[in-house]
Length: 183
Image (cartoon, rainbow, N blue to C red; front, side, top):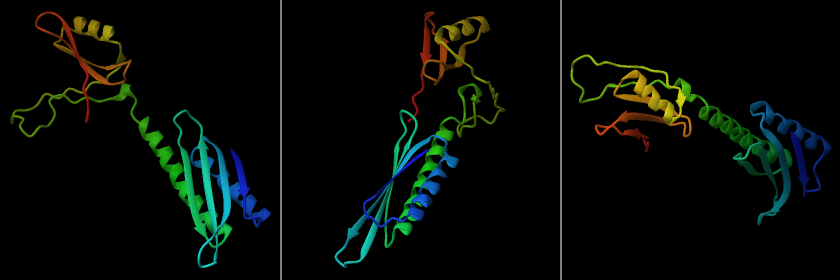
């Protein structure tokens, strides 16, 4: 991981530079797709004439849809501002990692489907619950399954869209594919 430090205060010690590089390089332990981190130190003067240091951190991640993570903190000295900004960036990196992990948590081949599930208006008679592992298929393959199984419908994962679809034969002999839209 590449770490770039921009010091506009002209007071940044070599030790603080190495600490910043070391702490930012630890971000890759949470998420290995962190490519580059930039740290900007600037002085800001307020009306009270107290010296305030602003630390901005920008983290670039690998990937086409990877966001640019940003954190900015103010403090009386460079180390405090850096630590506060690092805490924010660390939380953002962990959140990004969890979002990416959750998005890939259930691959389409492991979807469990429950037909005739518990509904408030369901009759008191025992329900027939069918659980089935779905495989990604094209619409042509789903049509062949419908014909060979001699069933009224076929539930499948559309390999083009990754969505669960249902195919059935209409009364006139034509086929209909239902693509659910979840709101």
